[in-house]
Length: 87
Image (spheres, rainbow, N blue to C red):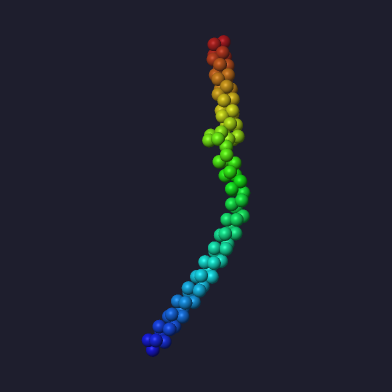
């Protein structure tokens, strides 16, 4: 009786292991597929970022340019307010 029960338990565990292996294989293939789809685009972007000198990207230059213009406009507005107050 014990042998029959042990054999049944062994069979259940073997089936669980097989199912897990199939499921893991499926997930491995799926994650590899997702990796292949996304890595090509990301890799190109990473290369561009890597090749650009540190802190010298187009976005960074544009942001600095906009900040400079904003400071200029704020200074002009402050001067205009001072002029209006003095009149």
